[in-house]
Amino acid sequence: MTKGNSAAPGALSMVSVLAFASASIPIQALVLAISVHLPRYFASHIGLDLALVGAAFAMVRLIDIPIDVFLGTAMDRTRTRFGRYRVWLALGAPVMMAGLWGVLQAGPSTSQLGLSGILLFLYIGYSMVYLSHLAWGGVLGPTYEQRNRIFGAVIGLGVAGAVAVLVIPVIMQQLGHSDGEGVRAMVWFIILAIPVTVALVLATTREPITPDHKAHFGVRDYLTLLKHGNVVRLLAADLCATLGPGWMATLYLFYFKDSRGFDTASANVLLMIYIAAGFAGAPFTAWLGNRIGKHRSLMAATTIYSLGLMVVPFLPAGQFLLFAPGMFIVGAMAAGTTVMIRALTGDIADEVRLQHGREWMGLMYALTIGTSKIASGLSALTFVLLAAIGYQAREGATNTPEAIQALELAYIVGPIFFVMVAGACFIGYRLTPERHAQIRRELAERDALYAEAPALGSLTGDDMVVKT
Image (cartoon, rainbow, N blue to C red):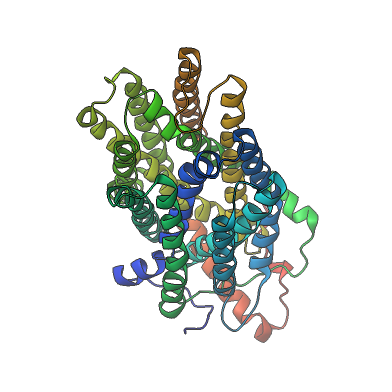
């Protein structure tokens, strides 16, 4: 296992980038399972009350947000001979596996408190793994172009995990198993993929350690972060960019079965096309971001996504070949939006580190994960809305035309609005590739000066904090 070091990383080979990105396979597999399959699994197959399931998911996602902030801060402050974020990735893997095991133990008698406890444990493990992996990626590729490359690979391989959990239920159905058994097989896949991919990352990837230049750092310093214009811009965009697709994902199977006339297998194949399109969308937007700027690439992706989604209600029900191209385009842009937000987070963290003299990478990614969880929690409340208007989620239930119409409006209007707002958040953004290159030069100069400070005998950490 390689040790963390303070040297600035050079350009990584594609093999090294893919090895590091492999941990996103179980991470994104779990994200899709939580968004699409697990709520319906608990409500339709386990038989738990629909409102109970929605409330449990929403409550846990909101409770988990301050935990993410604590974890991000703790990661940034961690100092071990093995690295800063590497340790947290190793510790988070068994916690995430244990949480998934708890999902498999849930039954018809599980209470809301019991389900919330299972989900909270799962989310803590997920946060430890996901957050440490993102923060590690942020410092692994410090330049504008490298960061796009790394996060393009991270999102691209995450697509592989997401596709796997879509294929598994289809295969299980073909073998004569129920939808519920397909979900359980999906959970087992994630459990087994976690130790394999995390071990690969730990064994093959170094961790550069950026030095801190400010010795004293209090609560007021952290609150200052939330006053930084680009941080607020980023968090608002991430909230909306997650809320749109998350809202859609939560209602996906209900909408495509009850409104669009597809069976579970066909709906899963269309969703597989949507997810697999990330193989094209992730590298495309990374490439585009290196040519026109990340924020412009993000705005292009959100616009195309919304336009594509507008077409869906007008397609004839049950026509797979007509739906497939649109699902591909929308899915590619959804993945591309995620790539750009993850890469932009690292750039803004560099800007803030130059200003304040301390590593913020873990906390920055914790904040974006927090906004994502707020969005996921809000999207889960669509279950409560559907229950209130009389929509029946249980298998074999018959819904009224009014309930179906409410489902259709909820599925389409919200995602289009929020995704467009996400793109609009970056109007007037000024952290261009040229400005970021200047920031990296100033950081490198200050890091080199800090390394020589003991010999100079007259410099302190506070002396080298840039005052702006």
